[in-house]
Length: 302
Figure 1 (cartoon, rainbow, N blue to C red):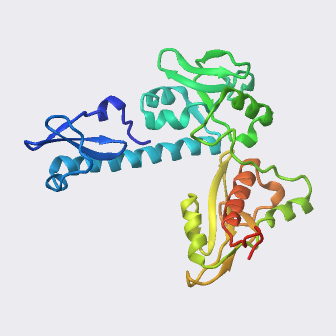
Figure 2: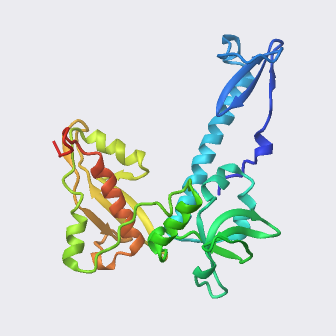
Figure 3: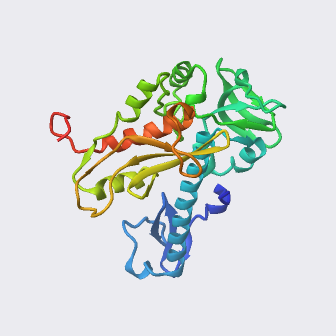
């Protein structure tokens, strides 16, 4: 787990940079002012390689990496619906890089038998080692959860998701981690419908392979062996969702293939055996790649 970066530990104020200037970090950028306190529009040349400026730039880069790491960690907790100790949430809450992606997520307490207690679910608003987790429950009432563990459920596993979305919209909730308003796909009941669905986003044409490769990696997916893929752990079992995007010369034209699912050893997984989260996240990836296809001015594929 990434090191916690508390606000008070990084609020250094203004630092001396020689006899004439002071420097600080402002929204991730090194800024300067003169000794009279007048802000400067740009960093003077004499300061660009100063030790204090280099140190601030390195700190800024570390903070960006830390923030990204926290966002990814919280998203993984949500995608996997992992039990998370409340003590962990309380420990990291003081760090804005953790608090921002955690705030307003739906949390569901676990009972002593490890079962979800959805009747006590709520939107996470606070975390305190002594008081527990502060939540707004689904009746709009504020309360506290003092259980040992909670889960941050993937939306496809939340009962009455439409009602939860309406409730959050009424409160003006804006989640930094997409949970309630994350796109979800429900696995169809029949074999024919499932087969049609996994081919729904096939045939998305790209003028150059490198374009779909870039879209894949920028969305956080892997490119391996000519396919875009993601690994989802569902109920402790890994499954890989993949979409063929092509291989060879990155300047060649290519198009997306259907969605496939494989198990731990690379064996094909029957569509009927794919869990709800893996299905939804696989379809979300396929839709994302298809959305980047070449289209004409009328919105049709060129």
